[in-house]
Length: 302
Image (tube, rainbow, N blue to C red):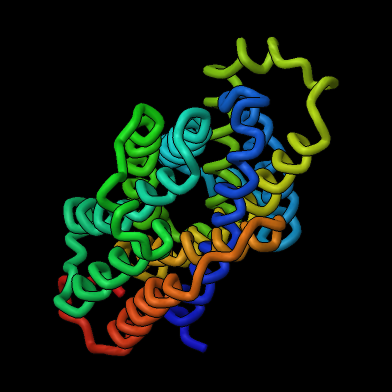
């Protein structure tokens, strides 16, 4: 399997794991402050990834030249996760997922600005189809619900987090200097953890950790070990082998994965008309895979 197809596989798994953050995160968003939760999340994830990096590639000072790179990337992802949980405090999960589907277009724009990655007509078509399919799934095929969609404070907060997420994707490719994905991820996580520990210390100190419910700890472990450590490595690998727009296009699958998560958690399954939207997201990904097989102009990174 070529690195390009492994990059697509990495993002397929990434989208499934990230979807769990919405279903689980909405259940505890008001039980612990976003700063405290994400500070501990980054510390746990950095520890796990650090052990993995030491066992696979080893950690050497030469791998962490220009540490400002890791501060920039860690800061961007810390902003995203903190604003995500602030958004979930007041916005419904369905609304935040709708905002999340804006990231591919934002990422394509940042990819062009920073890397001059050109979005071909086929990729633009795939992004459009994927966006339409995602919106259809999010609102479960209910046209009236789509027209009634309202933008609230939580959605606006989360939108700026999505901007940080979209900027992060091309920045990885711009700032990476050949470090292995797991080593590069470790540097980013350490920087993000340091930022959150400093900025979020008042919230961390004020949190009664012993009084937190088992569900909060379960979600914390999931977002730290699965939705952080594992997905960071997958995202780093994919961004080194795929254009930013392709990487972020997998966010269109998130609403479909969220439905599966909701069913697994015992919530009602959607009606059959939602399958139209799922089919559109699959079609969009097929177009992206075809795009990966098409010879690219020299101005486009693949």
